[in-house]
Image (tube, rainbow, N blue to C red; front, side, top):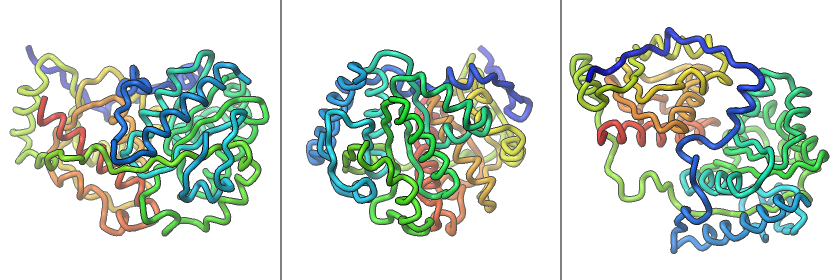
Length: 349
């Protein structure tokens, strides 16, 4: 059966406000997870502790009415302020330790209208709907989950702090995660005290829970496969790995250009109904704006668990060394980790 080839550069999805809001749910990757399917690392006791605290928090959300660890957010939120009536809970830790699995498990565990999305998806939602319409829509929810709260953009941080404050005032329960890199909290980004001033009003409403561990995607796993040798090898691999499937085949340069014409809030719709990606001529991105848009695409691809075949440079070279060491490094490390996982899945398909 022949593979159905499509091109992302030919797609220009239109998404209504209702469709945008309906998309605020865990992705297919986390569509059926639960607290029971989370496997805490026995050598990291904070992981099992986080499960118990989230279960207790879920019970509080269900009734619509834990003790946090250390770390950067604990300091910002004033340390351990556990309370059964806490309006929010914050999972603080490195990337790849299962915080998204836990956050999605919380979402699945509570009833009623609720939202689940990444920090970037919420800022994109505000950009698409306006701040007031976003608040009016989300304040009717019982729970709002914000995955991968980001510390590297003062404007977006102020925006999200205000959004969380207004939702908390409306009685919405909040749950969030951070995706900071161990050992580099606050480095290369705007001053931590600036962020602290913006969210100080929330400090008494959040319990901070530390989740320690190493990136599970690299625990004992092999290195990512090398890119394919040339376009002919790529086309052969597409037919071998994805017979009868829908694959988006694009020149990498044209793809990143297309991302500048499609609002990031529509990236989820951009890749809808596809089974895999294939990119010709992956190169190192050397412009920050282009790189940040590509990170959003990488997140949406990872959400959908879409394997990637490619030629060109390997994914650990898709961002410059300066980017990987700069203020947005946590975004780029996350993207590399996720793209590597998707490339490995394509190789094993």
